[in-house]
Image (cartoon, rainbow, N blue to C red; front, side, top):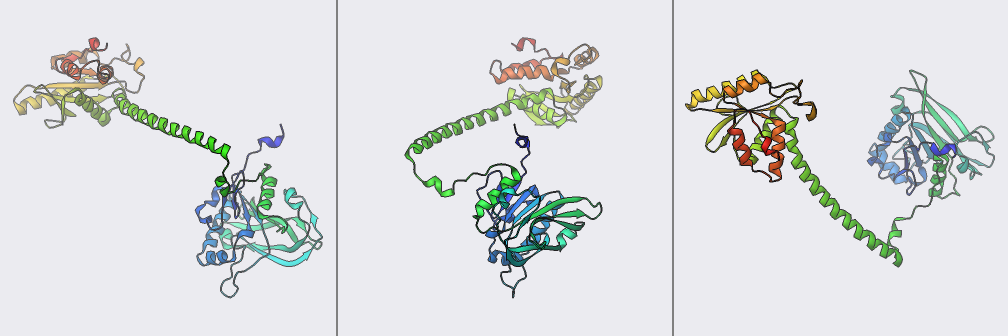
Length: 424
């Protein structure tokens, strides 16, 4: 395999020409829609830049913005390639902008012509193979303020091709950081070759730079040219796309249903408000009536078969403790004192919530230690392990057991609630 096969493809933008492979293409009129600094290599075709647009962009200060973006590109080691041409000003009386107003450096061309060309080392062998005569040469005397304000000390020019007396017919200028002296990005100025079609010229430049062939892209109108045998294939493609769209809708519905069901998994990992909310929602699904805390600082109130239950939820990284039980017992006693009737507490515990379920309820990770169960039973409090409740609740979702059966078990128990016979 050739060494070039593994060469990374630069993220490339072409301005002023379209339908090129391995590159994003944008017209001069739409250049404002592109973040120029997002690319590593920008190829600029100046032949498609109209005089009217040069004037409009100068009046709207678009060129200033473009110079600023291209300056940032160069300072981040980006590359610019310009397929140039003689410098021109659309209206000397009204405006001083030229077709090089986009460039971060000042560019002038000297109008002379000849056929003597001395080629030096350069990366554009395919493009320069068509370069036989010249009508101007480049001068790059300095940089614009956008580049100077970014800490560029100077630019250095390296010719790719020159005339007999040293005029740069093709070449490169590089920027150097003022504080470090390091060379950063560079701009390559190529000659205009009139004999080449604009699209072909850009293709040759891209092939030289990317080492990838450019094939002729079909024009937009080609899709409207009828071809009977292709029409049958188009119909088959449309039918299958319709099938795919239908399947994607079904998948979307299944995913929504899955997400709605998997919310109940919060019972085995959540804490605080999330645990309270999902447990309240589950008890409501079971047939209980849920209302906000109103008697003390309980999480919420459950009403079932005419009885009132104060509910507390605890999601913790260790076992449920006596402190949790005493806290709920205080709420129940305050309820009895204020309301003049007996109350009952329900404590949902999600202990060791950060551990996998298989590691919980082991000798070193008890859910409800023995002293907690004994105290809760003495105080008439029901203790629910959230994992057990989740398992039972899954059977409610599949209609294998009723919600009222689960509520009967919870409200009728003291101490740890046993769901064993409801697991199935």
